View (spheres, rainbow, N blue to C red):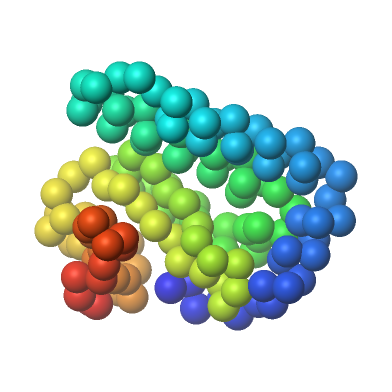
Length: 137
């Protein structure tokens, strides 16, 4: 968790009042549809497309009004230095969580997070029932 408290209502209000938000959200939707409508059956191609789509949608969302600023931006920039495919922030309230998809093994990622001074993180995995927590560090 980012450990930065902020009002989800305020973040969402900023987005609603932003003139560019509608265009940005439609662009994010188009990116999602690119993945959803893919006809590829190749696992590597689909994984690469998924990674590209998550990264592209976050590149738009992080620049939307009120999504990320100040200390959240500092945390984001610290995480960007790690070997990752992409980074994404989830949850508008309570500062949210940064979700990363590393390019190295989980144990190596954990060591790199700790070396970067990030000691408060949770490992997660995807299962048929959705995201599941593995353990908290």
